[in-house]
Length: 299
Ligand code: ASP
Image 1: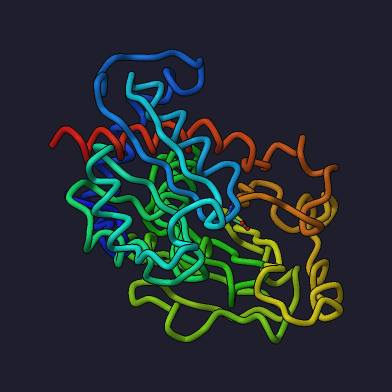
Image 2: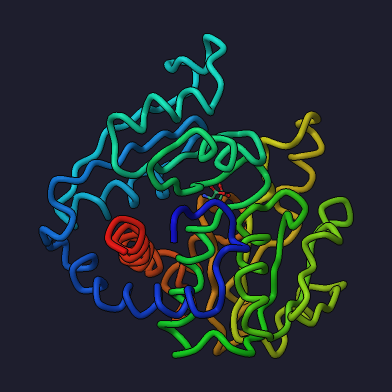
């Protein structure tokens, strides 16, 4: 494995290998321990778009494996703002780091960066297009919860048009069969190109219909960054709210995932519901990124 640029590179075999490797790192990640497996290696974390979890958990993963981190945050403080191409930036940074994690607003940016890089590159979110390590995090939480990824029925609820995270999870799980129940405001429906072979799709009309019979729910925020009209965003941002009552009534045994940040779609009252897994998933996010860094740097 040379890079991780797109979720489509995550074959079933590779996903399962990373899940098993993440298991071996989970205690280290969860108990905040460290090892020296990547001692002497340097990660360059280039985050040209806002990030809290992906940046800090990728950096944490590197540090817990004994590596070190250099960071560039915000395009306005980089040479990209002076007109440097992503490819040239990649040629430069390949002289400093052993691996690069990049987030950038442009779809295809990680791929363009990798064309200039001579070290492994991890796509940590390229605009609305993809977010493979978030898909690995969600898959790992599903794997920990259900002991498998095959054949799960998942309700995808929220802004499915602009959500790179829902799109990425659908793509990853298309290796494992199962069913996707889709529920979004009419203007934010999943685009046809994001309906992958290998999954059975069902468009839902109501929240009750979407929740019934599911193993898990993947909720996503309405992505404010893709709205020109703020009043339209305000109208849609709380279109589907997963209250505790709705969850307890319609899917009492389901697992609830969310890439975070949540805005209005999951009220705080749900946080201590037994199915709420979105904060629990964070330690797994470090473990799975440790597994990925190890794979990229040592095989
Ligand atoms: N943190 C995730 C992302 O970067 C989800 C979100 O922002 O809504 O895509």
